[in-house]
Amino acid sequence: MRVTGGEAVVRSLVAEGVDTLFGLPGIQNDWLYNALYDARDQVRVIHTRHEQGAAYMALGYALASGGIGVYNVVPGPGFLNATAALSTAYALNARVFCLAGQIPLAAIGRDGGVLHEIPDQLGVMRSLTKWAARATTVAEIPKLIADGFAALRSGRPRPVGLEVPMDVLAARGEVCAVRSAAPATSAPVNDEQIEAAARRLAEAKQPLIWVGSGAHDASKTIRALADHLQAPVASYRTGRGVADSRHHLTVVQPQAHALWAETDVVLAIGTHMRVPLQSWGVDDRLTVIRLDVDPQPSARGETSSMAVTARAEDAVPRLLARIAELIPPRPSRVEEFNALAARWAEERAFLQPQTSYLEVIRAALGEHGIFVDELTQVGFSARVVLPVYHPRTFITTGYQGTLGYGFQTALGVKVARPEVPVVSVSGDGGFLFGIQELATAVQHGIAVIAIVFNNNQYGNVQHMQRALYGGRVIASDLRNPDFQRLAEAFGARGYRAETPALLAEALREAVTASGPVVIEVPCGDMPDVDRFRKLPRVRGRSST
Image (cartoon, rainbow, N blue to C red; front, side, top):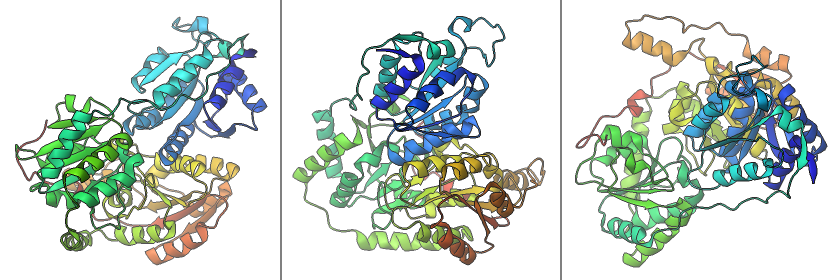
């Protein structure tokens, strides 16, 4: 068929199952949006007020759904505006497709001062993705998009990118029928690796399972494996929800630290497990079994006694079946871990008012609601305090620590999961990074509940300035608007809640709203959660 480059892009996206695109139009992408107009019954376009919003929403869509989030931006400044989100997607192993415009093909690399020209946009894109390419003809667009989606569905999930110059989008050319969605591919499970890992776990006296983002699609069998071994399942950020917080074997990072010194075998599923290996120590008594789709983690100077290279959803059932052949289910350790949970409850009582606010939020979310954290004391506390029941219901920035990502990402989460409540918690500083997307939420009816804890500071920065630098406070005090009135000015609902009880009242109304809600919570300084994040070494040496 003979189509424009824009039509070739849209037809290819539809063939890959894309029904939602987050984007911001501009002159270099005119022919793409012409094609999107014609396909508006197949692809919903959610247009944002800033390029970072489009990319963060695609990130949230991918994290909450386990699928692929697609965003489009103009080249140069538009592309660069979105790169904080792209780097966050890279750090979080998120399946995000960056579709970027580009200046005319003949002008690339000429330094001619063409509108939105920057040096080596494709090079920047390649540094933040696992696969990136440029389309130079209409005919090659379907294959390039198919290749990008194949990369997203194979191996370690990380973002990909494709740039299409404006003249290629406008040109007409012959294209072959687009390829249908490529199935997910991964390395076959190695029976010898499974056998070695199963035997070592069967022999273990104090096993521990640690899970990260690569474990979400194996949640059910990981829980069954933990029950069979009576092995606690630990997580910190990206693995929360793989194990149900209501189960006696589910532990958070401070509880895992209490177990670390006596652990003899740790099964790390879909995680680097950086914190314990680098900070809590290792020794010759500890066996680390890495189960990861990426064969590289153990090549980065990290301890790995054994490796199982496979997707968790492929390998864990095989591992469980073999262990069940080797040993019967172990006796319950419910009393032991209930006692551990009671001790942790006493220790975390220090974290007030964060804990009380999080209890209110958990109640409002219900069984399947989704929580989106941020770089704020309530967000930090949630990583060790908030109960999480199901996979993909705790969304985090991970090690990237991208201030201001939360509210914008939560909008994409809600687009992916409109049937459940979605709550974003932010500080006043981080929330204003993306306040313009409140207009997007109102326009598109995205009913996210944004809770803004307002202490008129970049609070974490100011805490460090006071505690570590002799009170040399600079550039961390903030002048803020009235967030309730600001929300109403955008056309959203606005509330103010000075206490956990008042927050609970506001949330009861917010969960029924058909559009976005902002709840301002005025607050002062809160206890520092670092005492539960920066825990001391309890054995041997660092792994690096």
